[in-house]
Length: 66
Image (cartoon, rainbow, N blue to C red; front, side, top):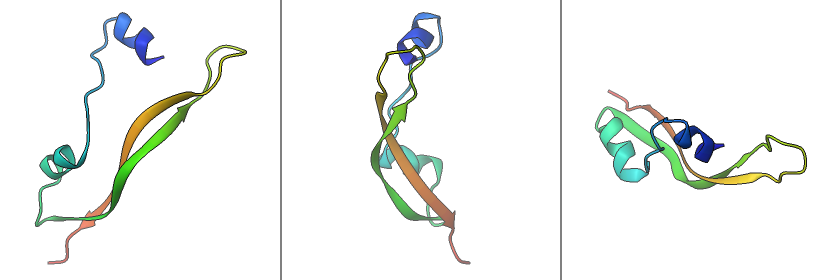
């Protein structure tokens, strides 16, 4: 699906990891509760296709105590 979106003219997904998380949610205002790499399983769009493994990054944050 991602390939089809890019071929249709949408911008390709960018890498997102710990450095991008720190940039988007700079400390000391945010506290990372959990973060790490994972895999999202994309649902097949056509009968007979298998799941698509999509590399991912998850993060759970909360506002830092004042």
